[in-house]
Amino acid sequence: MMKKLFYGLLLFYVMGCRAQQVLPLNSVWDDSPNGSYFKDLSNELNQFVGTWHASFDGKTIKLFISKELQKPFAIFDKSFYKDELVVRYQILNSSGVTIHSTQNLNFTVNEKFKFVSVASRQLMNEVTLVYNGGACGVGLGIVSFRITSPTQFKWNYKVQPKALTTNSCPPGTAEPAIYLPTVENLIFTKQ
Image (cartoon, rainbow, N blue to C red; front, side, top):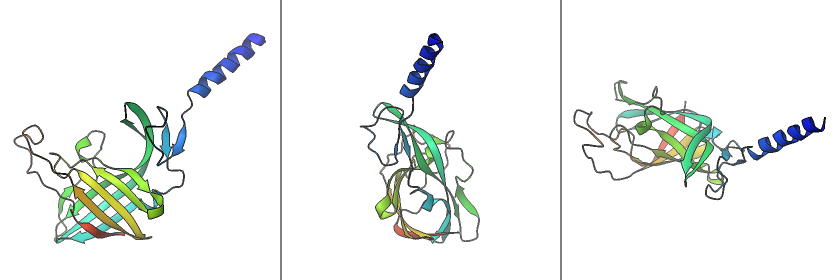
């Protein structure tokens, strides 16, 4: 009987040591234990989830924003998990023909097109995202969304300068282009 109790307590202790620490979404990463989970406890990301559209320069931009839970990421030589927004998009010309789309891409396979949230400011109704830039990395940049009403947000996209090389954009690759609008304060409306 004592042996069973001992092994039971030992198992409970070992499992307790391996328990994942759940922290609020915007906790500081470098102070957090390896394996921590940055959870959207207050559901601040939910207001961005949905299908949104805007018109710019004769084109229609549609964003398909979803919230994914407990996505792994690594930083400061540590591994963590976080809830994040994932953005896929479709750009249509004035005739309604798709010019470019990431709507059906799997970002695990197509990392170059990854477009995900990295931080949020709940009091400002704002989220910051990183867009990897596409096939040649052209368009790599920071995007922010700021909710202005339950059905609208402002878009700000700051592109990082990138030098094209044959390694980043090999011969035969489609012409490098930035398809997303590189403007400030573009209004997106929820569909």
